[in-house]
Length: 104
Image 1 (cartoon, rainbow, N blue to C red):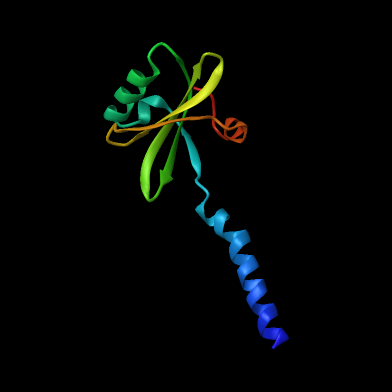
Image 2 (cartoon, rainbow, N blue to C red):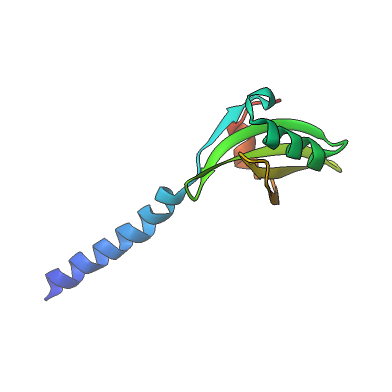
Protein backbone atom coordinates (compact mmCIF):
# COMPACT_ATOMS: atom_id res chain seq x y z
CA UNK A 1 0.00 0.00 0.00
CA UNK A 2 2.83 2.39 0.85
CA UNK A 3 4.52 1.59 -2.44
CA UNK A 4 1.41 2.56 -4.43
CA UNK A 5 1.17 5.89 -2.60
CA UNK A 6 4.87 6.54 -3.12
CA UNK A 7 4.59 5.86 -6.85
CA UNK A 8 1.52 8.09 -7.09
CA UNK A 9 3.29 10.90 -5.23
CA UNK A 10 6.35 10.65 -7.48
CA UNK A 11 4.18 10.68 -10.60
CA UNK A 12 2.25 13.76 -9.48
CA UNK A 13 5.45 15.55 -8.47
CA UNK A 14 7.09 14.82 -11.81
CA UNK A 15 4.03 16.16 -13.63
CA UNK A 16 4.06 19.37 -11.63
CA UNK A 17 7.76 19.90 -12.23
CA UNK A 18 7.95 18.93 -15.91
CA UNK A 19 4.56 20.26 -17.05
CA UNK A 20 5.46 23.97 -17.16
CA UNK A 21 8.76 23.19 -18.88
CA UNK A 22 6.90 21.48 -21.71
CA UNK A 23 4.75 24.58 -22.22
CA UNK A 24 7.70 26.98 -22.37
CA UNK A 25 7.87 29.11 -25.50
CA UNK A 26 11.05 29.36 -27.55
CA UNK A 27 11.96 32.71 -29.05
CA UNK A 28 14.14 32.90 -32.14
CA UNK A 29 15.70 36.25 -33.04
CA UNK A 30 14.78 37.46 -36.54
CA UNK A 31 15.36 40.55 -38.66
CA UNK A 32 12.41 42.83 -39.34
CA UNK A 33 12.93 42.41 -43.11
CA UNK A 34 12.37 38.63 -42.76
CA UNK A 35 8.85 39.02 -41.31
CA UNK A 36 5.76 38.69 -43.50
CA UNK A 37 4.74 42.06 -44.91
CA UNK A 38 1.44 42.28 -42.93
CA UNK A 39 3.32 41.62 -39.67
CA UNK A 40 5.88 44.32 -40.49
CA UNK A 41 3.14 46.84 -41.25
CA UNK A 42 1.26 46.21 -38.00
CA UNK A 43 4.43 46.36 -35.90
CA UNK A 44 5.47 49.66 -37.48
CA UNK A 45 1.96 51.11 -36.97
CA UNK A 46 1.80 50.05 -33.31
CA UNK A 47 5.39 51.16 -32.60
CA UNK A 48 4.74 54.62 -34.01
CA UNK A 49 7.73 56.81 -33.12
CA UNK A 50 9.05 54.32 -30.53
CA UNK A 51 12.38 52.69 -31.42
CA UNK A 52 12.17 48.98 -32.33
CA UNK A 53 14.95 47.32 -30.35
CA UNK A 54 14.64 43.70 -31.48
CA UNK A 55 12.23 41.20 -33.02
CA UNK A 56 11.70 37.54 -32.12
CA UNK A 57 9.67 34.75 -33.71
CA UNK A 58 7.88 32.25 -31.47
CA UNK A 59 5.17 29.62 -31.54
CA UNK A 60 2.23 30.07 -29.19
CA UNK A 61 -0.58 27.51 -29.06
CA UNK A 62 0.75 26.01 -32.27
CA UNK A 63 0.68 29.30 -34.20
CA UNK A 64 3.59 31.41 -35.38
CA UNK A 65 3.76 34.95 -33.99
CA UNK A 66 6.26 37.77 -33.62
CA UNK A 67 7.26 39.95 -30.67
CA UNK A 68 8.79 43.33 -31.49
CA UNK A 69 10.34 44.98 -28.45
CA UNK A 70 10.14 48.77 -28.41
CA UNK A 71 11.46 51.44 -26.07
CA UNK A 72 8.31 53.12 -24.77
CA UNK A 73 8.98 55.94 -22.30
CA UNK A 74 12.20 54.27 -21.14
CA UNK A 75 10.61 50.82 -20.65
CA UNK A 76 10.81 47.83 -22.94
CA UNK A 77 7.41 46.70 -24.20
CA UNK A 78 6.76 43.82 -26.60
CA UNK A 79 4.22 44.21 -29.40
CA UNK A 80 2.84 40.81 -30.44
CA UNK A 81 1.40 40.14 -33.91
CA UNK A 82 0.62 36.97 -35.83
CA UNK A 83 1.97 36.16 -39.29
CA UNK A 84 -1.16 37.70 -40.88
CA UNK A 85 -0.47 41.02 -39.18
CA UNK A 86 -3.24 40.66 -36.58
CA UNK A 87 -2.39 42.64 -33.43
CA UNK A 88 -2.42 40.25 -30.45
CA UNK A 89 -1.49 42.67 -27.68
CA UNK A 90 1.43 44.12 -25.74
CA UNK A 91 3.27 43.03 -22.62
CA UNK A 92 6.25 44.23 -20.58
CA UNK A 93 9.47 42.58 -21.74
CA UNK A 94 11.04 40.26 -19.18
CA UNK A 95 14.72 40.62 -18.28
CA UNK A 96 15.41 36.98 -19.21
CA UNK A 97 14.24 37.58 -22.79
CA UNK A 98 16.66 40.47 -23.29
CA UNK A 99 19.60 38.09 -23.13
CA UNK A 100 18.03 35.59 -25.55
CA UNK A 101 17.29 37.93 -28.46
CA UNK A 102 19.71 39.99 -30.50
CA UNK A 103 19.45 43.73 -30.92
CA UNK A 104 17.70 45.17 -33.94
